[in-house]
Length: 351
Image 1 (spheres, one colour):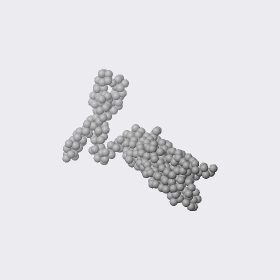
Image 2: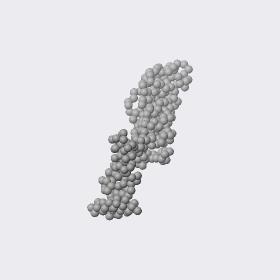
Image 3: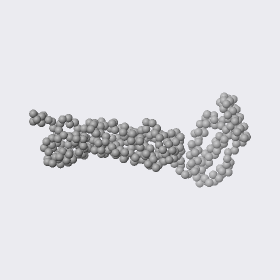
Image 4: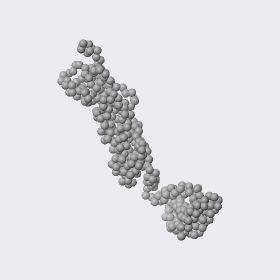
C-alpha cells in the first residue's frame, strides 16, 4: 500500500513564475501535496527572487538564473534537513517568488492639512501630493516582516502602509533638513530630496528600496502663500533697489486700477490721491532711467528736486475731493453713508 501511495504521488521537476503584470509583489508556488524532485529545475527570471522556506524558516535565496536543485545549490536547506549525503528522495519546501522590478507612479498625498513646525513661522498647516517609485530590496526581510505565508501579496496591499510612512515623515524631513520651510516650498526638488533622505531608512526596515519620490504640489495657507510669492519676486530682482522699486510699482498698478474702476479711486481720500501722484512719478523716473542709462544720476537728481519729499494734504485738495464726492452722491454712485464716511476721513486728515 505504501508503495502504491508513493507511485501515485506527483513530483515537481520545474519551478518557475511568469508575472502577469497585475502588481503582484510576492507569489507562493502552488505545492498542494506535491514534492520537489531531486535535481528539479528552478528558473528565476530577471527582476525576480526565489526564496525557499522550510518549516517556517527562510532557507536559501536565489537570484536570476537557472538552477538544478541539489545539496550543492541548497546549502542552508541541506543543513536544516541534515542531509549529510546526497539526497535521493523528493522533499517538501515552500517556494516564494518576489518581484524586484520597480513599481512606478505610486501616489501619495495629504487627505487633510497636516501641521508642521517651522523655525520661522512656528506651526504651519499644509497640503501636498506627489508620486514615488519603489522595489523589493530585501526579499527575505520583506517575507518575514510583510508578506509572510500569504499566497499572493500585491502592491495594493502595501499601498496604505507606504503612504502612511510618507505622511508620517514629512514633518521630520523638514526639521532634519534645517532648511526654512519657505525655501523648501519654493523648491519642490529640494523638498523631495529632504523627504527621500528621511524615508529611505524607513522603507528599508521592511525590505523596500525607495527609488524616487517627487513633490508635485504644496498648498499653503493664503497668508503664507503671499509671503512666498513676495519672496520669489524679491529673488528675481536681487539686491538692486531700482529693480525693487520697479517690482513694487508693478505690484501696485493692478490694485490701483481696480480701485479706480469701482469708483473708490476717485472717491478716495487725499492720501490715496497723493499715493497715485507718487506712483506716477516713480513710473516716470524709472522709464526715464531705462531710456537714458548714461544720464541716470542727473535724472534722479532732477526728479528729487522737482518733487516734495513727502506728499502734503492741503485744504484745496480736500475741498476738491469733497466736491467730487458730492457729485458722485448726487448721481447715485455713492450712498449717503459712504459719503459721510469719506467726508469724516478727509476732515480728520485735514485737522
